[in-house]
Image (cartoon, rainbow, N blue to C red; front, side, top):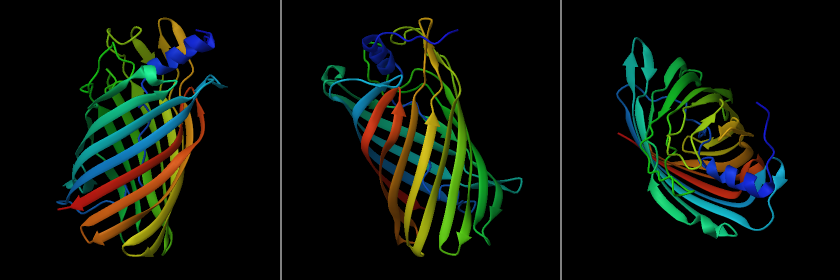
Length: 290
């Protein structure tokens, strides 16, 4: 089926119809440093992002196309040993607030609980003596989130998703660690009541990499880059180019105590196609071990 190149006005509506949060799984550096079996983690993520540009098929839309989002994610993790492998079953529950501003004020505002995510990373390489780790993680997104076809902005996506991620970390020098990962996302069809008609989407991909410099055992500096391809999507027989995003971030991690960690990162998009471009993003992650 050939790609459709509709008018810019129609294309902007189609781009908004695609889920604004339906991208790949971002990693925090150190996510694949496993804890010992029997350990549990409670994590809270706080994310604020401001977008001030919108691209449709390589064209920047005129005007002030502002879209801000605030996300809180609650995550519970428990490490177990299965047949000699460390596994960490977990659940993630997001709460999402979105609001259109300036020329996108007509999008309105929406706050709701997003799709629940179930995950279970498995470590295939676990060598604490050399700080070398590698694992694979399936993330299953359940269509449980708040969704209303009458709204453009929704916390839920009205579809199943499966993300398969492979990632790891290696200590380059005693004070420098390299983290890298890649993932692939498979999208289910949206429900029949999805805004504008049922949507299907091709497989999406992401690669990401970061470095950590350890100032001491409780404090590090970090930075990374990521590139994601959202996958082309089809709605009402129109085939549309998928969202692509290249971004970077810098930050730090601090351990106030042996069982507590705080991560702060700042970032922004370098390049975006077929979506809103982030002018700035702030991420805070709070972790408690018990």
